[in-house]
Length: 288
Image (cartoon, rainbow, N blue to C red; front, side, top):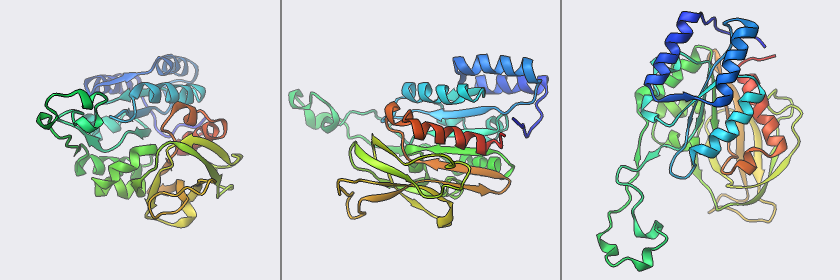
């Protein structure tokens, strides 16, 4: 493994203090890995920050899935659900930023009767407040991410993180595209369309039962590495049965990967897709 940034002991401890103050916690695997790597190979090693969890994607299953991924790569990873803490100051302590959440927060809660399982039993459904999602991301946060990647770091955007691009021009500029929508869970096939790219090399086509996300990609078609297709002929709105499912490209001195699969842990741990995630982390961090 080659590390791209020297981290001395004082800087590392300061970084931990900043992370703790920002509501970041290390995974069990990440703590053990951090100790092991610092003993075996000195202070030089990349660190990962993962922003996870939202209304529709529980942070627990995401953390379990990512812990298996990064523990297998022997990479220390810190997790946070505190979207407001994402900043240039926080990111400078890491070499890879992973985003696995959408762009919405719900200040009034999830109270609308249409989304409540006992809505038919409510005595005053008209009195319930309407659900009103609001974006959490700011252009300053998007600019922090942009500078982070331009400086030579990695950004791994998964699944519904493409939704954040609807609310931040800077975020979208770095990530490369934006969310359109998806049908309910159903089987579809994911095809590798660029088998020579390091992220997709050695990965076979695979089938998952998942949300088939439809996204817009703003950049070169040659960056696309994955496409999905519903083989039962089921489309989504007027967009047909096929969708872009992943891309990878260089951005400034850094690198970006997006993969659309991931609504369930079963999909995240599909064997070929899991190998692809490992490839993505290695490529983003320039690991040999």
